[in-house]
Length: 225
Image 1: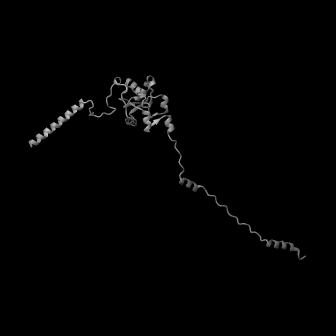
Image 2: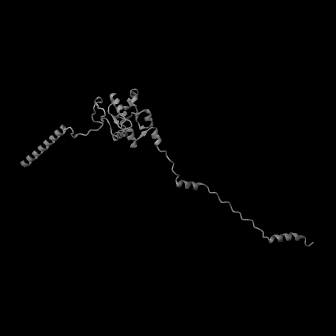
Image 3: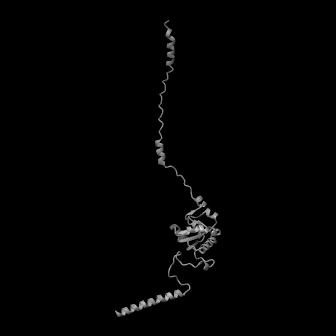
């Protein structure tokens, strides 16, 4: 029995030593595997002044943005011009063009309160407006700012809720279907049917033989005289 316990203790000691050694090697290696998976909303981000040009930090995937949209926990800011915004935008989004940030941000700021995320978007893979708007928001003290890259095109491709002139024009008008046959039949049954006109029997025609006889009788009334 003591031999079994000694072997078991040695095995556990070797296993613990192996795990500790593996953790040390993983921590030392530059391409070590992450041990804990963090959410994009809770992952720590570098300060805006330390962010490098072209860095993808702060971007959010479309599926995550859609989940935040459906739960109402995010505010979407459209960085494009007012004209493009009116043509079509993400449903419920707020227009905040980059060129008008200084003059319009104070009016928009109260609408960002209580949101778990603030998502800036524009249109196109190379569109810099959303990143510029996100940078201005961070410098103004707004927390949890993310960029939905090529947001408008991706949002339309997934047929997610949109608003604007183009969205209203794209909505199909309701078409009236054909009237049900049963209604037509009942309508025909309710219409009064015209009663057939009574047929009049033709007047009896006198035979040609009787007509000369009557004429002869008329001529011969004075035959005795």
